[in-house]
Image: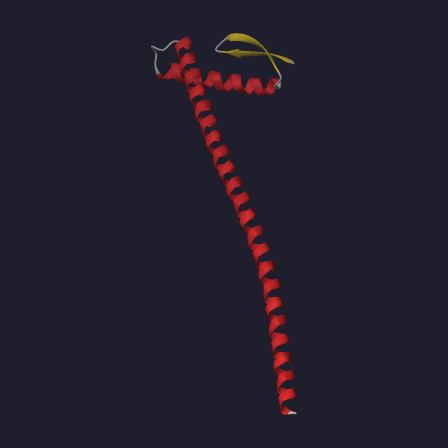
Length: 127
């Protein structure tokens, strides 16, 4: 567990995290930049109000990202299901091809036997 101290808008925050210190320093800079930008846009907005708006914006982005991830997971599941169905169809088609090859071979053998029989019958009738 890492202990990290970050400063946002002049206030220091002590954090315990599994993430690296540099990760949280970058996040703190991003949060401070967002808050400073909101305060700069409107003289009537307090740092606290800007922080709340920044938090809402971050949660909105996170929520939309999670929804997007869920949609992607659903699509991937559909693609996997389709691929499995296609694989099963392919296996069935290959099985049918093998069965048809055997049937063709059997019919060719029957034809050869019939031709041989005909040849024998013709030679017997000629005598």
